[in-house]
Amino acid sequence: MTRIRRRPAATRPTAQEAPGKDDGSISVFLVMVLFGAALLFVALLSDQARVLHANAQAFDLAGSAARVGAQQLDTTALADGTILVDRRSATSTVRAFLAAHDIDDITVTVTGATVTVTLTQHLSFRIPLLAGSSGADITQTRSATATAGP
Image (tube, rainbow, N blue to C red; front, side, top):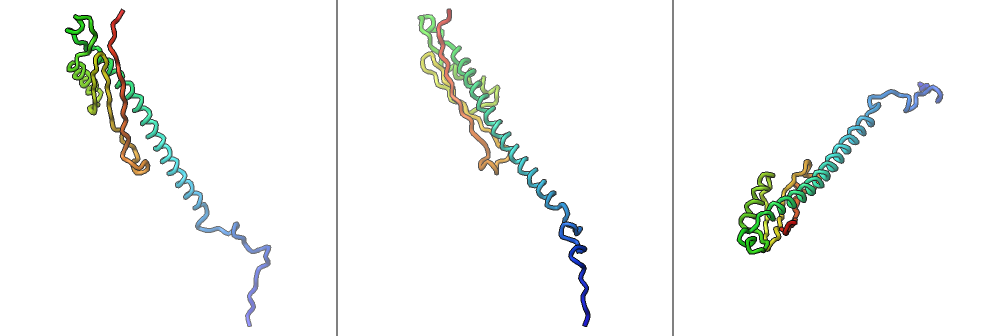
């Protein structure tokens, strides 16, 4: 009968001492996963910042367009001492102003001396699959009223 000799426990290599082909592989995998997650997080934050910026820009453009429209006074009514906005002139001026800013989804309402402008623009997301949609529709409404100056 043959006897198998065993090394004493103190001289056997432990799992931590034994070199293997998998050394460090979990570290590389973890770094890749964390890098990908960080990249997606930054992309989502970037899209949200773009939505906030587009919302502020639409707010400013709608207000500017309403003021431009409110400057188109009806000269016949003005001669009588009444302040009214010329509907056709205000609408065409507002549309031309916003077309210069590449916005074409516009609603212009003129009531007496008040011009109300509603504009909508679409903002595409950089990573639409994560956000669950292809983008966001930004809508802003602003009004301006023509008044008598000093």
